[in-house]
Image 1 (cartoon, rainbow, N blue to C red):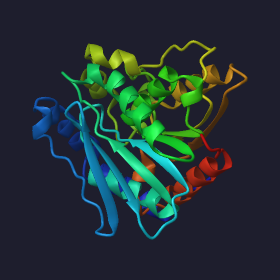
Image 2 (image 1 turned 120 degrees about the horizontal axis):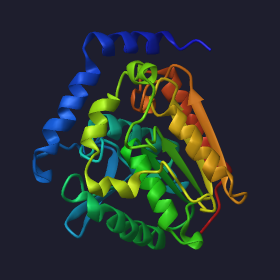
Image 3 (image 1 turned 30 degrees about the horizontal axis):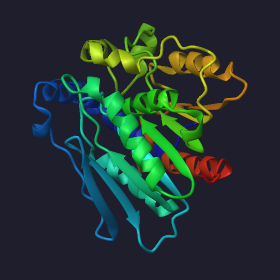
Image 4 (image 1 turned 90 degrees about the horizontal axis):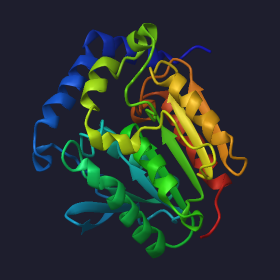
Length: 289
């Protein structure tokens, strides 16, 4: 299946500008900075309503559109190698979910290297408060490192606390980034060799899923992964492990020719179609808590 002209042009630009090298340098630079000095963006269009509170010193932001009936509450966990705060590209993705009719909760979880060890317990605390205080159907979305955090959260929850459905975009199940030389070369976003070093701190172990107890319950989960991501084999292995539990509803889409986190590139027809498919998936699994 051929990719769109927009995707072809984007891939050529990413290669020409050495985007992967720039991103890896950004990760490395920010890892050396205190959390409060890393640039984050919580800028949204004016019509987006916002409410924020702090949980143990970290922000939890909720955004919604007043002119849209709320059809569900969605918690969205951002990526960025466990290093980066919320980014403008991530915010643009959130706006698409707002337009679909979701009220979105954005936890700004503790980051690597020093605070990441607190993020597992912190997210569980924030999720449980959100789950109890918001009404109606609950959904969970994580992208990249946020997908790893979301899966760990699912595994920590009691069955009665599970969301109606979860979407995991570009999860990296194997944080040692073991992959073939060809797969490493084809990944236009993540350099597996550098990522292996960046994710080498002990706190990451909570979010690595190379091996998993096949009896674990996670409910309805859909995995979206770009076809040229170096983690494709690890994603396939993870979904097979989760599918062993017959009570899980596990589906996976490997989008041929797509890059890591392709939904964040809003100019791509493939991104628009995938976001629409996430909405359909959520609504198909909607039930009140």
